[in-house]
Amino acid sequence: MSEAKDNPGSAPPEPKPSNFIRDIIVEDLKAKKFGDAVVQTRFPPEPNGYLHIGHAKAICLDFQLADEFAGRTNLRFDDTNPEKEEQEYVDSIQEDVRWLGFEWENLFYASDYFAQLYEWAVKLIQAGKAYVDDLTADQIREHRGSFTAGGTESPYRNRSVEENLDLFERMRKGEFPNGAKVLRAKIDMASPNINLRDPVMYRILHAEHHRTGNQWCIYPMYDYAHGQSDSLEKVTHSMCTLEFADHQPLYRWYIEQLGIFPSQQIEFDRLNLTYTLLSKRKLLQLVNEKHVSGWNDPRMPTISGIRRRGYTPEAIRNFVAAVGVSRTNGTTDLAMLEHFVREDLNKHALRRMAVLRPLKLVIDNYPDGQVEEMEAVNNPEDAAAGARHVPFSKTLYIEHDDFKEEPPKGYFRLSPGKEVRLRYGYWVKATGVEKDSAGNVTAVHATYDPATRGGNNPPDGRKVKATIHWVSAEHAVTAEVRLYDKLFTKPDPNQVEEGKDFTSNLNPQSLEVIADAKLEPVLASARPGDRFQFERLGYFCADLDSQPGKLVFNRTVQLKDTWAKVEKKNQ
Ligand code: ATP
Ligand code: MG
Image 1 (spheres, rainbow, N blue to C red):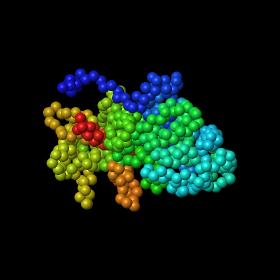
Image 2 (image 1 turned 90 degrees about the vertical axis):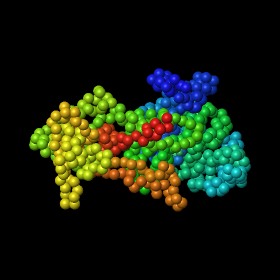
Image 3 (image 1 turned 45 degrees about the vertical axis):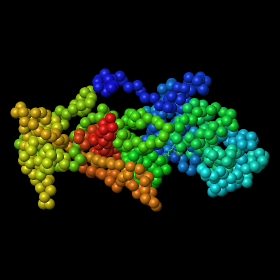
Image 4 (image 1 turned 180 degrees about the vertical axis):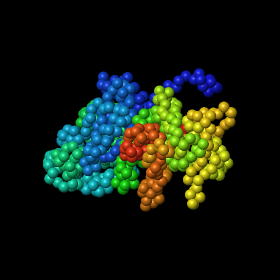
């Protein structure tokens, strides 16, 4: 029987859970594996798309672990593929890393090392460890074998060092067309690890690079550049995702052959989220095929998308910390991410009243032309946020949903003869309705009780069962509100019938636009990026498109927390 369980108040604070990467670093420092060098990490994105929430996990690990040990973190662009890389991506990645709250020590590019990598390639040729191959890409693939069958050596494998040096130099000079030749490492075509079966080091690509222009027409493969880039930067702990575990022996092979600084690679699990795709290639397809408005569409799992949607950097960092790291891949519930967004916004977002689907409420016994300024609390979680005034008048808007002419059982909001509290306003009792020719309710009539000003209980002790929100019709500002739902209908968007792709799982209802929501007047001055809780509706954020007089809000997340419920059940 544990004391903590019986008396939770006396439980000692839980120690911060460690993780295996931190443990490795602690051991390495103890053993002085890298001498007196400080912990050096890097975040190494390829600038071929915008960063997504999966990258946020890698970023937090790289920066926070270095920081914990008073180390340093670089941002390095692994820009070895000129055909897919662009300056736009380089810029967005820097903006996103900063927004997440991190500042790099140095900004590097693998393309800065092209000359050094070329020199090292020559060195490997001279040592008989690399050769120029004339096989086509398809032939090389065929020769590589499979997991079960070993590979076949290329007929060009035993060219002389002189011939290889000559051909490699001519490759660089541009004498050969794309694909005519490659430089390969000479390792072992029989290796059980396919990555060691004479991997390609350089390919011919007559393509302009976003930084080096036309200086090069041969480009190093990612696998030939990555480990040496780490080494050049004296990266002590090089964190990457599990799919690179099989590449580690190759990175080590290059480092050993070249006798250069041995960075230690540590692999961790990729973040996967339900109802979400985290692959730049697929996200690019969504953009190109215009399934979304762009990389920063608020439905995208990109950092720029979730920023625009209203997520906070704190929420993402907290989420990443709670997810933790592991040595096996798994999938995290999207509801968990939303939980952390809600938790952070709950602390900081100012409360406001907004009516998404307005229904007129006319208070017949309220004086014509009278306006009262009602005091409303800005954030019950934060006394320092103070209060504001909300105008109250004879004609209000309430949510369509908050009135039912024939209330079903258990419906406690407004209905004929029933009384509810208008938050910060008065208690009102519905007396009748107006209808259009089709029989739809177009307005509700009510009376109010002056003794309930501020929404307070009347002296006679009677009770109401519901509190609803409202705005004054005359004072309200109109706004467009964009309601988002999951972008995909399946927890695993990649699960498709044969012959279809993930786009067949797109949720046709992922965006609903409300053109004329009615908001309380202070929201007229909201600036893009400002976040609020619209009472009873959810958290909202003024969109980038929002302008004075033409307001646009995004729903960041609804109030209901499904993940918290799941967690409770599991306890
Ligand atoms: P994508 O498949 O989305 O293109 P990537 O791995 O090719 O991703 P990089 O630009 O190479 O993207 O990634 C930079 C760093 O971010 C790498 O160290 C990579 O391991 C890490 N990373 C990428 N995706 C995830 C993820 N889902 N979870 C955790 N880390 C990730
Ligand atoms: Mg990649």
